[in-house]
Amino acid sequence: MTGSHIDSPNEDGLGFWKYMLAGSVAGMVEHMAMFPVDTLKTRMQMPVAASTSSSPTVFSHFSPDRHNVGSVFNKIIRKEGVLGLYRGIGAMGLGAGPAHAVYFTVYEVCKEKLGGNRPGHHPLVHAASGVVATTASDAVLTPMDVVKQRLQLKRSPYVGVRDCVTKILKEEGFRAFYASYRTTVVMNAPFTAVHFATYEAAKNVLSEISPENATEERILVHITAGGAAGALAGAVTTPLDVVKTRLQCQGVCGADTFSSTSIRMALKQIVAKEGPHALIRGLKPRVLFHAPAASICWATYEAMKKFLHHVPESSLPSLL
View (cartoon, rainbow, N blue to C red):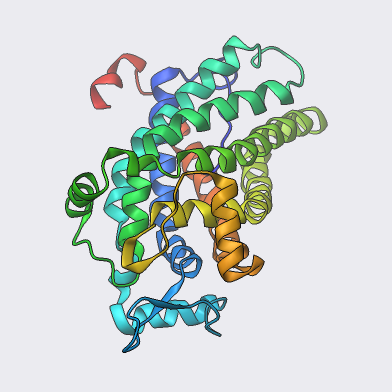
């Protein structure tokens, strides 16, 4: 999830429900628009099964096309069609809205309680509030993220979202939906902290340098700074994202299984079997995802805030 900043009600006149609705729409648009790139990342992070007469689940970890985004994209289009890039998008649609609602709500509450809305610079407060927010929202999104990841796999054994949920519950139990939760939080906590602190600092600096153009320039700052921060944070956290993907898809299509949800154990097992380079698989599509995703999220969020500015606050709960 891309980190985002919400101005306090004192700054733009928006209240609780408007922030939650704007954030939910922004999150859904962001994830849905970038879904094909996310599919490429998932495919590149999982080992490739190479069927043989002696062993049907032997993996070819060193295929020359594994690190080529264009090659993976062309294979999906050629063998599965355009719809192959969108398998699992229904799960993301179901999870992104509620998760982002929780995300923005928790952030606003924490920021207010910790004094982040007071005049001055509060990077630690914004970062801490972001970490708490992503921890809560990941608890909502992770189950649907597991379903989404499994549907994105090549030759996925699941027909759709309902079929995937039913089979996971029957064959692996409810805990399978949260096998990657610890890794997700460990990955998203620093990712989100950097985003919130960077956004708040950029907004304050811009307001001081050019207060007469702050409103117009703030959108540009959100887009450019968000894209750069998203790309950097995405690149740095790629090894943890690989672990998350493997934990979520373990045992599917012959993939390796893990004896526990320990991040350290999963890292050691992946490196021992495939080498350290396996931990940076999907780096390019992950960066390609987070840079524009942040820009899309910011543009949508700002547009929604502007649209909702004149909508009565009391009328929004019935719409959510």
